[in-house]
Length: 111
Image 1 (tube, rainbow, N blue to C red):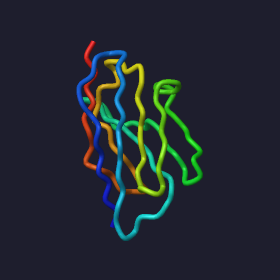
Image 2 (image 1 turned 90 degrees about the horizontal axis):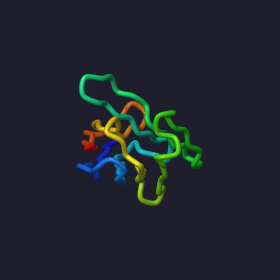
Image 3 (image 1 turned 120 degrees about the vertical axis):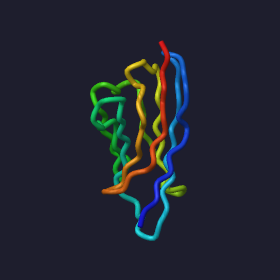
């Protein structure tokens, strides 16, 4: 099993920044691709960013240039630095590893 625990969400004004963290643990965890998804109220969960074991990254067009995904393999942790936040970034953000999901952390951006 793999456990994923997100943290770092909160309320921020438009234009502000937040840094999300996702700590992974479990007997079946190994260094592999990890990603971030988000689900806004009334909408489907959508892809935000992914980082491979070697550090290659990919982003949704809606967050390119504003969000940065990174990882610390020694800590089994992946981060999502979110800058220039917009009200439309408001969502619950989920960490993913294979078919495993965290419980989510809520991000609210006020206008």
